[in-house]
Image (cartoon, rainbow, N blue to C red; front, side, top):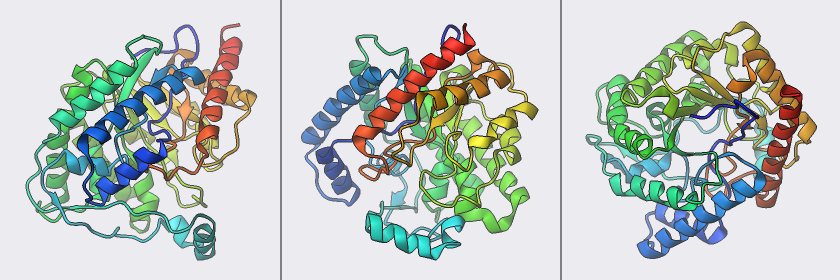
Length: 384
């Protein structure tokens, strides 16, 4: 994994806008409707090529496939794992912060309309991996799109065991621990395929922060820490054969505009997060609820070999951050952990659900360009 050894490199969290016709195909597949495989595969390949080129034009250094072939960052796994069937409603209607403001929830629906709901199959049988061809297609598409070598590095995202457990209910394994480690053993093949292909593996881990507000707020911080300790153990088990510097991980508190007053503070979990094997940690640092948390690094020493990928661009608003604001955010982190250990990115993805992003597609690219320009300005400050 490259570091910002000579200048500030840039990246992002993963999902990016998809063209409308591909969005329709993804939702049809999620609903169980028949989709022409050749049409779908060709459209995904074209989209990956386009989205990689767009990232490079915007000035992003470490790029990916935009998660073009996935309807969401977690539910795609049901096509790659056996053992899931049917569908279940979420165990909680809304995160705690939104439930505290029902008038705001009603307002959101009047503005945006009722959002589409992803299918949530339930685990009813043993889990095994069956996605060899699918992950190889992801690898091949990204390799082809970056064949000219314009990108500094490439990564592919994959759902962590704890993330899958958060969204897809277990009705087969006797305990949560057994379910977590079955998921870990199942996803291990995807993780290793990505790393073995020479790409960086990104583990998506919103369960390590978001699930507190979304599911476990009433249990308290100590119980939540025990829960995510188990999640990290499963993640470390699944990635035990992959060198840490071939992996990055992303945690977030929920990629939506809302109160977020029930989010667990980073300082309450950072010691556990840093025990995860991936060398790079991506986290929110731009939105109003978490941009102050750069001061955590005044007290927490970044372990040797680790780097951070703080969000310096908000992924839920259509404000285009001024490059000076971006540069200031980058410099704050660099002053605390070392400039070579900072690769700034975005708070979260711009399309965690296909077609459900809160930011206008064209503004997404303007925001990423602002990220790149801010990195150039931060470079001028840090390498005078």
